View: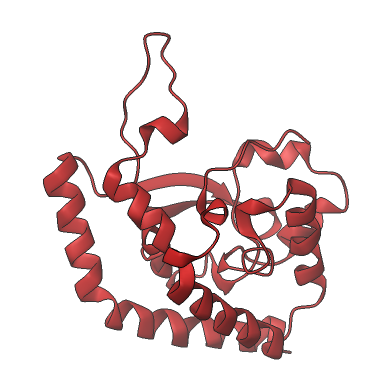
Amino acid sequence: MYKRWGKRCLDLIVAGAGLIILFPLFVCIFLLIYLIDRSNPLFLQSRPGLNGYTFNIVKFRTMTDESSVRGDLEDKKRITRLGKILRQTSLDEIPQLWNVMKGEMSIVGPRPLLVEYLELYNREQKLRHTVKPGITGWSQINGRNAITWEQKLDMDVWYAQNVSFILDLRIILITALKLLKRPFGDLRETEIPEKFKG
């Protein structure tokens, strides 16, 4: 019952309140990115959601469009100074509240990863797409990018199979506490992970 109807109600309440409360901060970050980088402050990218169907995730831009002589440049080297702060504090995720309002994402769920990973998942790992992707989730509060891909995907599947109102509230509460401690926590959690190779 909760997974089908209650979860959507929780999403609308939390995302709606978040958009209203964080709107002044959204505007400030939007203007800062534009004034510093002179580029579109928002970044859109196709990501797989529920049942693998793709949607455009929205985030604040944290990287430049620079490339090396060979035409490529590591993501870590393209992160701007402001982008690093936004990533460490997770403020770059604020625009995803709009994805939640549109029904493409949930407040809690497995993170929407790259489309190219879909064909690399085994049968068990594909179960992570039986629920909507989330802004935060079970693997995010248990190590995020400081844990291995196997651990992360196992946690995503476990969450998908154990969704409940109490679990979602627990994840939201722990996420809030972690965000308050983030500047003093394990910064490995916010580092860009190596790509998943199956």
